[in-house]
Length: 63
Image 1 (cartoon, helix red, strand yellow):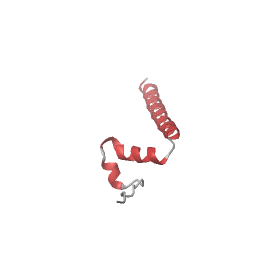
Image 2: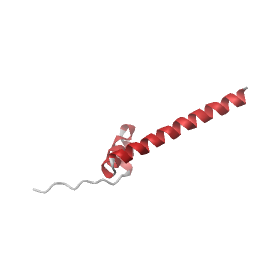
Image 3: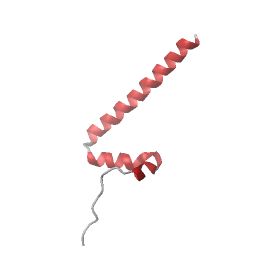
């Protein structure tokens, strides 16, 4: 009995999953988990810096 081949390519229907869990799961399987977590941390820190910058600019403009 043959096993079905695993498809690790990210496809458009994977983006339909709630919170993009299928995309993250496939990315995690494709890469080293430590490297994947570092990328997620980098994206999170970038978003936090962007939000901080926009709030700072808003305060400067509002003053």
